[in-house]
Length: 399
Image (cartoon, rainbow, N blue to C red):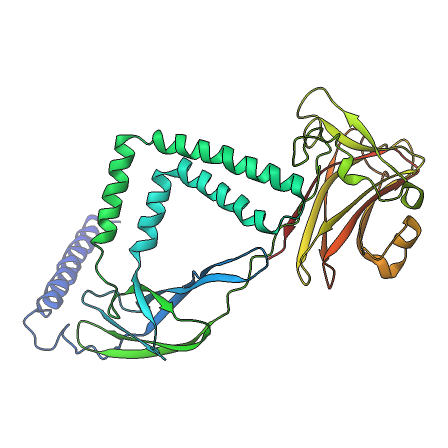
């Protein structure tokens, strides 16, 4: 490119640069905060109210499922689509007769006190749990053990109270002061607890007003359900087959698993023992079933009619022979091993094969079953053609 053309091009780019710059400056000068109605348009958006609720009802029943008391309480928390200061909340409830309101911080402060007195509270709960069982226990030997346990726990409770430090005592006193100074809950609180007089259907409404005075309303039908007794977790005697695990500290690991008639059901299983913890899923002993299938485990446990349960356990099978182990839930109508095999008496069952198993390796299994109309069921343990072991039985109520 010759010198003359280069000079013309440079001059052109230079002029273009200043034309662009001048245009930007000109446009910028047209934007002014002094112009009317710019950025000050009226807000026509109303709040969109909503609320969440959490049932925190508590109740207590005696061992015959008779209600002693119930507190029908639901925690309500309001919100809206607007994150603005000055938002106001106004609750309504219909019918309102007997409905009272609780400051949302009260349960939190009470839990904090329990946390400060954790050892004391744990012992108090354990005593209450045993005292709950005592009136309905018919076995005098078990009653004696329960009463002795209560007496021992009360000694421990007093010791725990005596060991409460001055610092902890002061913390508890401060928390109680905070409770006494809590303001009463009102229908204008964003979050509060409604205490209902009893079961029923209530209309709970919420009006949200923003800081510009705009408001909106929403409502829901809230059903307060009748309190029901907690379904008791069945007790399995000697679930890990260890010595001394019966209620009175006795037992050889098999006493809870003996059938009422060995001629009708078969002889109880053997015991496999280990000298070190951690080898077996639980403790130092497991139930052992010889390959000939002549040994059984039998235990009848109490269940709640209509409830659903999950039974878990561990199994180990000798892989050198093709065989299996079966855990069944049987109707108490069965009076023999032969009757336990009738379809009408089998509530639930699980069979595991030795094929693909590894020697000395335990696997965990689960069986879900419904109690139906039964007040008790039989846990039946059987095997065939290969040696096997079972251990660490447990049961929970399926929620």
